[in-house]
Length: 107
Image (cartoon, rainbow, N blue to C red; front, side, top):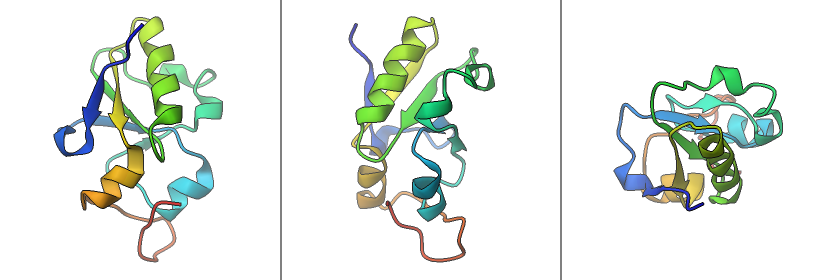
């Protein structure tokens, strides 16, 4: 099964963005409107992921998000991998916030 992918610059501003990185990565920097469910918790928390809309999945560089997107698509969800992940997000200068009050960065 081929997983749909989208470039960071093409992620819509109103997209449902699911960040599957670990807690320390999330705390360092993430997209302001992203929802955080670490990859290690996605199976037990899948009911928190909307089934009625497209979900854009992001991680640090695209590997974990690809796996999660593939799994969600197998469940019949509409999931798209964000190519290049948060590294590309940061490179494209898309908005980021941190949970520390410090300058956000991709850990």
